[in-house]
Length: 148
Image 1 (cartoon, rainbow, N blue to C red):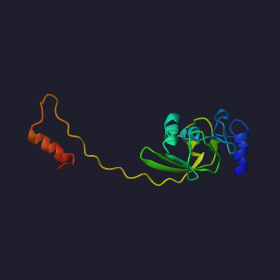
Image 2 (spheres, helix red, strand yellow):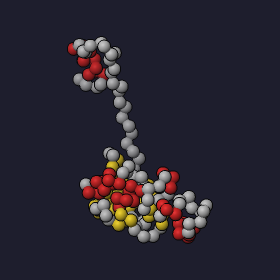
Image 3 (cartoon, rainbow, N blue to C red):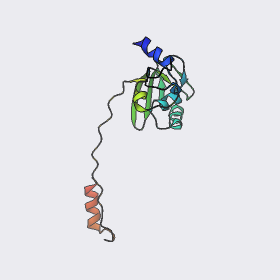
């Protein structure tokens, strides 16, 4: 299986790989941490990935890294982003952003499941033109929103 991946990634034969040759997917080599995190769609923008690295929210093999840290295949990347911890192992090096089906093939996701979403009560909507809420109306709105 590994020899098939390296052959398909190395030769730009049409139909041999789901990734175009311009995507630069390979099993060997290195790439910047912020660029790889952005390329495999763990963050929305590269600047968010770089900011996460600078803030200490990215760890590679247990160590905090800067955005320019070079990643290799087999490295374990721990990213805390958007209130969630992602734990991935680099399986392929990718330098350009690609579609989600191809991006998922470039890492092994060992992340814990996301926390369950909390039920949010709908916000009370007042009719237009009904004026300011009375003290009684405010108390009802507070009670509906979970207040005292």
